Length: 227
Image (cartoon, rainbow, N blue to C red; front, side, top):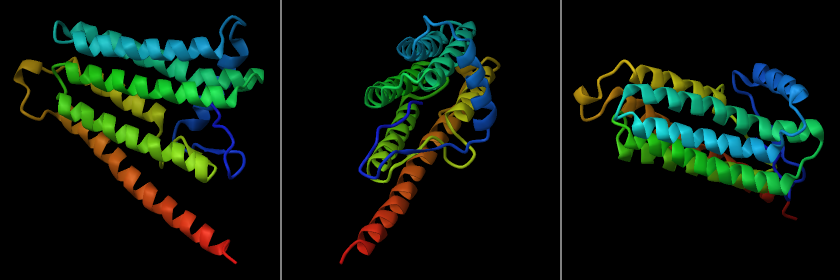
């Protein structure tokens, strides 16, 4: 993720406390140190979107053969690499463009989410309505994160011990499990529907709870500032 721009509250604090945050940061720092000069943040952002398109194609084509799911998994890896490295490389080389990076990076995040979950919906393993529920939950939580960065000066990259990287591992594990299932014998709601739908419901509940918490904090802060 790229560094958010400054807000009315001053510089934005990045909050990232997920389980894999520290080892992932060490890996990203090492990768930044060995990246050739022709690798740029913009190219990495494009690579991340391309990886999501690969995941979409892998899921969408899985109805013609389980082997296509390997393409979806490879897409997850490329998407992680591009999405995690673009901002890291910009900060490592001290070539940040905070407003541009924030706008482009998170615009691409929306496209990436639609591609990945849309691909699942086109697959024989996940219902379209369930995939759309997960998209809706993600976008709601994103709205909260962007608003909180603007009015509170906090940008959450994780909730509890889970963040984007842990979610990718969950989805990759689910994709591997798809390879050992029979899509022709699936019930009305499969285990994969429950996982994807459950993630979507968690996103919605997080949006509601975090909105209530942030609203209370803002109300208390503004009440204290009154003469």
